[in-house]
Length: 351
Image 1 (cartoon, rainbow, N blue to C red):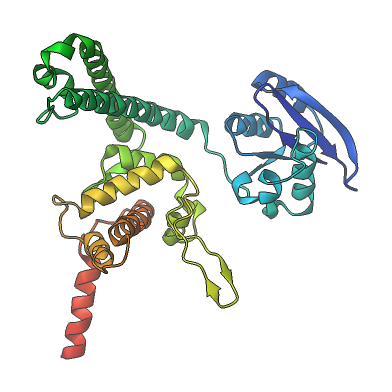
Image 2 (cartoon, rainbow, N blue to C red; image 1 turned 90 degrees about the horizontal axis):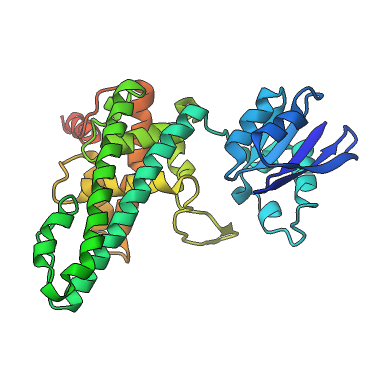
């Protein structure tokens, strides 16, 4: 049997197809682990197809524990689902079931993360929410102070709530003081999350030390990379990591026409943002001389429009490949490995 399951926030709709493709059951169940266990436990093993979404991680785990095979469809890669003119709670589960029954690869299946990885990602994404909230409040204070003729220069993010108060004009100091207090509380909470990240790296994911050999890759980026990828063996080659994280250009070739597209931005946006931040550091004034830096500078100096941005993205893509390579091999990082190889080859040719 094949089961198409359309996950909803309150109710999930399902349709069961037999070996001939006939619908033998349809209905809905409440979207919670208890009702899922009651529905799928003790039933004949089946192939269950569902879409990616907020509920798909726990739902796939519960259904697997009940003895069924689960396919989690990447709906973004299947326009037949997302752009269907007949999209509805009645139609979607049948479509999922028929696609899974005919050829599961049409659903572009993904492997859901385990509970351990999901908990770790929840930790660092909670930190990211606090950082974004603090940034928004800091920018608000800076903007208001400027409108009154003041400046908050010299106050960095970590001590902004203390250093900025003295620079705020007297007439609005009382108005902004509660905002500064919240900024200070957010900073304290962020520091606590930073300690937890370090503890996770040391206790649960010691391999992050291998990834942190690269200047510009800290505990947060290394841990996030391992949690998002989960299993490095899922990729046959390290170069496949770039497209998986949406850092590779899209394709739209038709005959002799080849459109120049931007990156696909598929995959985990949070991880992509961390890699781009690391790329900015590598290409920045404090970045050491490395193959990554030289590669990005070469692209940025082409003089083409948006060349600098393309250089950053190229470094982020190569960084993802390098992180995966270091993770799988455990090798010692050589910043100028490719450059030294080229020099040796040219020396042999000249000799």
